[in-house]
Image (tube, rainbow, N blue to C red; front, side, top):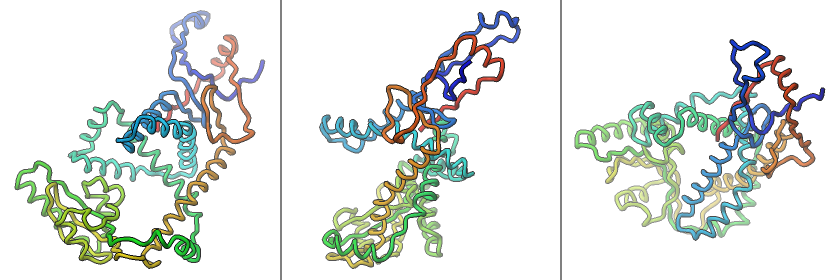
Length: 374
């Protein structure tokens, strides 16, 4: 009898058995039930057709959001270009999550923290309210948490395995600055971070309570609390996850009441609590660039970030190629992995005969692979 491949067939089946039936009638009473089509296997995990379809739908949505006023042909061209790597990205995430688990990395505290940030950003009272809101969109709560968990695990592995190995020296920063000086001739601008507390359709009493909370946060910052950490924990703006980072602004790009404040401030200074039409703002000037050629010390961090990102992508692809060489990755016919390792063995599935399947069931229980989502 030929040894069966380690990979199951493209469609997984459950065999329903009846414990009260006599052994001689077992074959007649079993009925295969279609569970899910497998697109790829990544070690002990699988990428299912529904995983692939969800990722495809998310890609369509992302492109539409990023290019809202683009002609249809441009949107289609962007989709055609990026969809080639759709399966590659799903496999990549599986490999990174598996590495995180192999290394014993836990992000459960960060998952709860992230869920609480989302709750605040959506002005929901409790995590139970967030769960209801998520499930009202048709997404299972456990699937939603698993998406967040996998993203955090992926980020942690990339930071540890790739980011920590990227070293950028002062000479390299200086060389980049000298070669790109024209890019650092700029108008006056400020780089801001925020803590935002919304007032929405609140009563005067509720607005006053929010003001008190904002004043308390401001006092904590003045006494030395970390601005970015407080922004992640308490800000109700869309920038909370990024520690309140708002970006760069030139004169004329901010509301006058905010512009009059921040353009008088120096790097590192914190504004008072400012009330706007939608809530209360506390702003931090991360940097203040005067008009003209920016000196190296002003743009050093920006240059280091540019060089870091430039090295991150090839470094990550090298690391993922290493993971693939150490792993069992196979893709079913009809699908393409754009990062497949050259020369990898292609394993073909051989359907077992009924007799073989019956003998295998007697030897051990069928362990169904657990589907993973993105």
